[in-house]
Image (tube, rainbow, N blue to C red; front, side):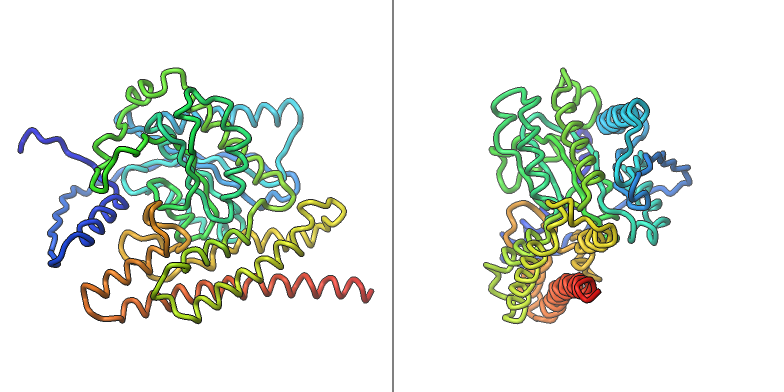
Length: 413
């Protein structure tokens, strides 16, 4: 129909819809998708600024928003990051305050065209970011509804996010509906965090208000009810209470990661999440289950033995702290698989949606095998997941061995 408006559907949502069709279809169907584009050259600009750290200036907490033309929904993220910068720089100037680690503020260009600004910058800086970026905090579309606060966070940062929400959430709740049931999960989302998650393995966080989906059925197309203009945002949050809440949560997250001597990451939560994803997986081989159990045991030892500096200032030897934080910072890199199905994250700790109870890539491989009647894809994916779990376990074990050797050397001397 000529009067039917165009509807922009994210790639993640498109994959979800196709997966739903596959579940309810007895006969396999071929879908033909035609994409029409007009190529032209445009100048893309990123705006980057930083607040240099006092103790570990070479470690970066990166905060990203985006900007664009008047037709794009970018004012919410820009206003929030501007207020955060204003507040932190005020403290830096008045009190001579500096964070432990450097805070890098980024405003990305061309986010609506495949996150070009953030992708190109991160790709160019890849070798530096791989060793120095400790977290990426995204402000992509922070207010697209006045329903539930939805927090998308890396597994290692999930407990910190929950603590911050519990501490700060009541400050600006406008109604009981808004104050109930904030969600904290690790799901695939739109935004500029893609490269940081899938190519750098950097822990990420994103706070956002969404519409409540309690009445939405499995075939509901959420994009039809999305906010698409600044005026709609103002109608949803006329007094900017939701914006203020997201700003305070984001600022608290930035300060906790940038300031705490020991990075507030939980390796045990990662190990428990791996076990949880394999608990009801009937196709997971025994070797994978055994490795997941070994990862949990190693993570428990690491959490109890090596995280003491987080609670006892007397044990904060600078060299020990540096090595400990490096282990915490780089753990998630072990869960990047080389090849993921189209539309799926390479970081297997993230799920396609919040209803999944197993690794999304494993679930997709099972569905593919049912259609193709071959186990080759499942065997390949299982091997990649198995190697990721083994790599994480060996990585933590190596960290424990290094710290133990250092302690033995100190006792000998």
